[in-house]
Length: 404
Image 1 (tube, rainbow, N blue to C red):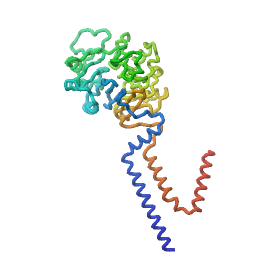
Image 2: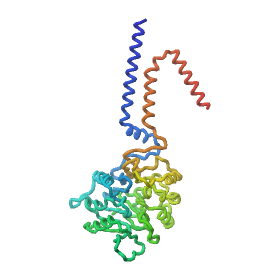
Image 3: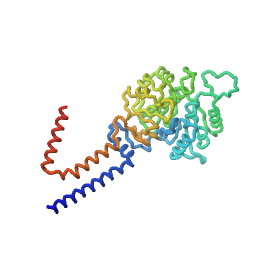
Image 4: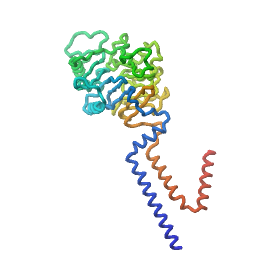
């Protein structure tokens, strides 16, 4: 009898040791909790976009440059377009520089080629690295706002419809663009098309080498605006039946003018909206969103004191049917890469996947793992009589729960 008791104790100790080892292994997964959560939640979320980026398709990089904007578009035909260049502070510039170094640019005369450089408007958080871009890349086309640099001592009257600024950094950018050999300068305005060499109306959305960017603003008849934000161009990129809208810092005045001046309102219906002005309260109005109807929103934002993105703006996105899972921010998700495949499939990957409608957290999985280990290892130790009693109690409590 004593020997039997001794063997039973050994058996129990062995099970306890195995249990503790398994718990320790489960606990060690904490160090990879973020990756595990991303993996599980991606497959849990039925509305998640594919993460299979087609290298032969079109790619849009929403670069995490803190509280600033920088977007790189890689066209399927090989051209590259940079929209804005981050803030002027060192940390934002380092993020932009490090990211662009990973991109495979074409080389001409020993320089990396940037086919298009779009400067939306002369605010520091959008033009911070512009001079550096001209210094380190061969810029073929510079598309800039209808904004003139005006020295503080200049007493000449402003040109009609042209905004004037005395921002010295903007002046440095204009000088750098003039020094760029072979660079064509274009003032952005509504109706301006940027398109692939193979473009024709019949090929658009059919030929996967054909793409088009249409500028919806600034609208000449609506100028001048009283702030530089509204000189930001609103653009729609079309490729293989999908549309992405870029907005810079355009605010409600521009949004209203676009709606009023767009004859075919269905053209405004896009798949992805890059939120205007970092998701501020003054952008993404209910009226504008009722026509744009995005399925996903990307907000370029970082730690700030402006309350960006504004909770009211987030609510307006939800009012048109979006959930937290459809709204991505560079602050929460890091660098965001949106792809449109050659067959027209929308794809998205980011540094950090965010699912907040219902997120399965690591500790949920850890707790479930411990519970399963407990049942598997210790349940057999319960006597048959006690086991049946326990099973009966579980069934009874389950029936009560269902009735409730």
